[in-house]
Each structure stands twice: as structure tokens, then as C-alpha cells.
Image 1 (cartoon, rainbow, N blue to C red):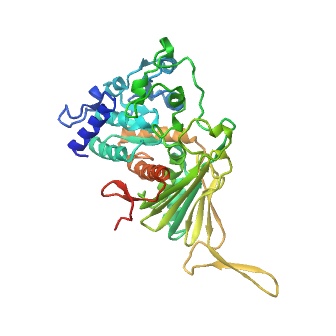
Image 2: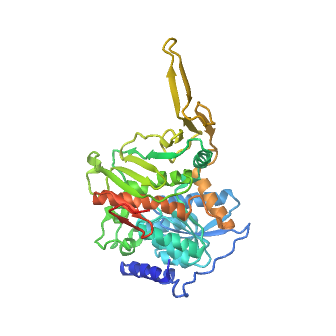
Image 3: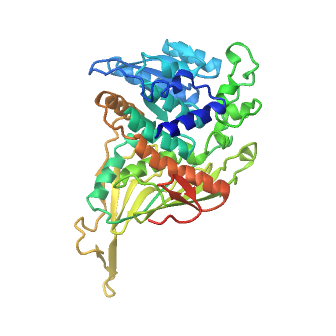
Length: 458
């Protein structure tokens, strides 16, 4: 991005209540970023964690366990959370420093990487500041909250040459890369449509995480919450415990199903395709259809559907309900065959094999009743029977995703879910949220980097 664009972005963040300080000081250094340590093959990686709530605590534990299993190759030196109790417990758990101020983490000179596990509306702010200060970033999904932030992140990774891994661990599973090769080898012909789902059902509704009744901005000791910082760039409002502890129910901080769950579907599908792509047209539907547990205070729907079209002539179709748990298979349809990557439909679960089913013609002999089949295309070289391609699921996805990030920190290669692949997923998801909220079909103008109401001419 240009210096003027970055400067405007930082000013807008500051005006929204974000005091950037050292973390946003790239311009004070003449537009240059802080130098980072060159890692040797045996150097221990020092990590800071911003956001140690439910997910952040899980990710930090996973990184810590990975380090312990691999000759203490990494260590967590500092954790941060705006909730004193969470900060204190995480600091004790990892025997490290703790702070309420995320700027201390991104500015700390002895850190090599920062894990960003805040609510969605803070992801880009912290990640950009970390990269400006010479840190590699492991950013929990979704990559960010707005499409303007997508552009900022993509450009900043290019400028700073930082390693940026989006934390959708399913993208490190083997089936997507086996599917990518099968498609590249011509096993399904021209790609036509990708489909997937993410379904859940809970008597308690969705995202109704436990609320600590004692906690708040006026509380003392470990019950204190820095509410002003937590709101950051979002609309300023009085403390609301439901918004703090159950942020995924509100548009100000999350995109609900689209950003929490569909990111785990769209990202691996982009990996399967011959190349990640931005959509040309996006529409969405759904609503709050569930039982009493979904009728309480919330912005986001419990049932959500996404349809997107792409310039290369294929569509993406996704469905989800938080009030019904039955999935549909995750697959990609081609003119000459279909590849099923997730027959059980659960994109975050392992599978033993992927299946390629060729398109065939079936003919019944009227006299004998015998059915014969043949490939619909004369030059189809893969036969008429379905083919099962084994998948290596011997290692946990989260372990593999962390391993990939750590290896890339040493090699400086792109990780599995790099910023550009992550951007392709984030844009279509954000457009779907906008389509749902505005009740209209949207078209993506990649050159102008915005949603428009009419098709964009090629």
C-alpha cells in the first residue's frame, strides 16, 4: 500500500479509539519496518500472544505443546488480554510476562512472532502493527473483519516480507493437496461447482459462551476488563457483558457463521482450485430460524447460505445452520467427474481417502437387463470406476499447521494459508455478510477493491 493509504488507515484507527504508539510507528521510521532477528536452524523462537480467551488459550497451549515435543524449539515470552483474569491465568500457565496492553507485545524486541487471537475486529490492527515491528504473525481466522483490512494485510506482507499464517488449521490437512493434484491431472475435467457446509445444533444456541458476572470495566483486581480498548475501532457504547463474552453474535465484531465457520470451508476449497480466486458475484440468504435459544439478543443469523460465481466459470455453494447438525459432503464437481474431499461433510475432521467419481453413461440391455457403463468422454483416461486416493491423516491438523508456520519462519517460504490465499477466502465471506445485511446481490470490483451493484466488465 502507499504511504498515504497506510497513514490514512492508522489515523482512522486512532480516531476510533486505538492508540497505536510504537506499534504503528512505521511512518516515524521513514516508512521502514523494524529489523527482525535472522533465525538459525537451532534458534528457539520467541512468541507473544495477544488474546488468551477460549480460542487464544487453546492456540497458545498447542504452540507450547509443539515446542515441548520438538526440543523446546519455541517459547511463549508474553501474553496479553484486556481481561485481567485471563491475562493472569495465562501468564501463570506459561510462566511468562503478562500485560493488558497489546502494544507492549508487538513492540517487544526479543519476540520473533505474535499470535493474534482477539475478537475479529482487532485481528488486522494487531497483525499490521506486529509486522511493522518486524514480527511474523499467526493470525486466527478469520483473517480480519473488513475488505479494506484485507487489502492492508496483503500489501503489508509484501512490504515487510513477514511470514503470515491464517489460523485455519484444516488447510494443513493432506486431502486438499491430493485434490489439487487430482484436479490438475484432469481427473474431473473443467471445474464447475464447489460445495460444502458447516452445521451444528445446540440446546444453548450458538456462541452463548459463559459470562463472568463479576467482570467489567468498573471491577477491581482480576475482574477488571479494559472495555475501551476492547471496543477499539468498533462503535463506542456502554459495557455489555453479552457483547464482550459472546462477541460472535454481533456484526460490530464478527460475521457470525460466515467468518467463524465458513472460513474453514472456503480456505481449503481455494487450495484445491488451480489457483485461489476472487469472486465476481456473491449473494447470501438465511435468517434466525432456530428455537428459543436463538431468539435472545443477537445480530447474526443461525442459518446462512452463500452462493458465489467466479470468472473462470464455476460457482461456490455453501450452506449452514446452527439449529441442525446434518452436513452435506464437501466436493468439487467437474464436467468429467466429481472429487469428494470430505464425504462426511465436516471440513475440520480427518478422512482416510478422497474419492473421484467419473461421469459415465449407463446402458441397460432390454433383453438381459444387464447394465453396462462407459466413460462419457472418449479421451477420458481414468476409467469408469470410482477411484479412492489415500490421505495421510497420521498427524493432527493443528500440529501440522503450527509446524508449517515454524518451518516457514526459518525458510521464509509462504505457509499453507498465506495472506493471499487467505484474502481470497476473506473477500467472498465479507461480501456474503454484506449481501445478507443489505438484501441484494453484490459484484466484486477487484481493481477498485469494492463491492458494486452491477456486473464488472472484464
